[in-house]
Image (cartoon, rainbow, N blue to C red; front, side):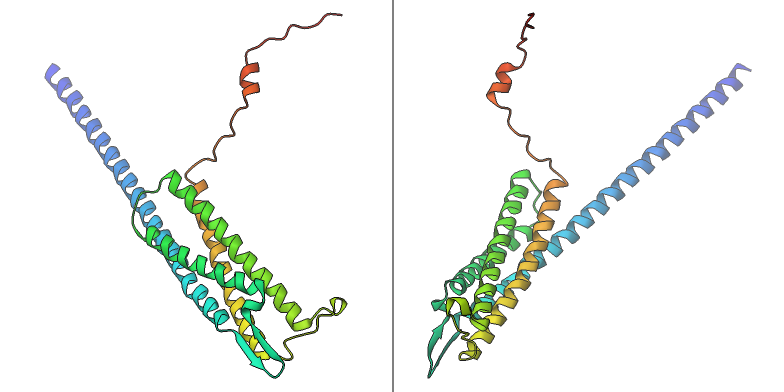
Length: 223
């Protein structure tokens, strides 16, 4: 009788152990599947981000070359992109963004573990380059509008009526620049997501006065 009870208890113990092993194996399988899914999503995001960093290179170089070759001479005179500071800034901004896009694409394409300094660096630089290229496009658009429409109160007549090809090339260069701006806006959103989804924002430093006053009791004044 005792042997039968021992056999029953031993069988229950084996059954419990088998169930525990099954649960543990299932948990490990779920965790492995989750890790593989996260890794797959990370790889997809890296591929998309690499493409978005390579694509503006062609856009910026195209806009830069069009503006560099933008010069016209006729019986009314000569008009060159260097005559307008906004167009010169557009050329420089496109050159800087093209170089940064190539440099950042090479770094992103390498499968390296993400760190907080790296995430913060890309976040800050993406934001900075976005504002640079956006400012260049906005300033050039304003100058092109004045060149086409003129400014009668300032006695500035329209120049596009006399230098039509110059204005057409400038329009094409500015339009391509704004396409690059869209790419940089998306890149800024991606770098923001990668930063703030993994890391917390830095805590504001405590002032010395607050630290010195901490723990100091002020006696109440009785009138």
